[in-house]
Picture (cartoon, rainbow, N blue to C red):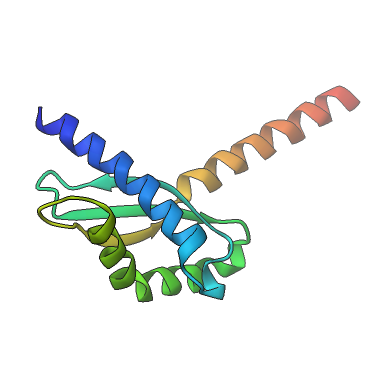
Length: 117
């Protein structure tokens, strides 16, 4: 039962934060930010928000922008969601997407090299 509530809250936070970052915040540092997924702690007091950036060079700027907008995002979440407690937000760069892209690129290069031989 508890895990189902955590999963539902994760999905709800993912959708809400994605919309807030994409459509409501006016920060140039967040233009290329894409929210990938959200993991909520077992006590539902904290949420880790994993994000990616289309341009790797803007990763640090995006993280700074998200951290500075954290209170605003949390306030908007409190207004949107009917929760007893709005989780504290912690932002982390999603490195899994980069690893997956690197693996796909390596496979593609090997495939092209094998076809040319």
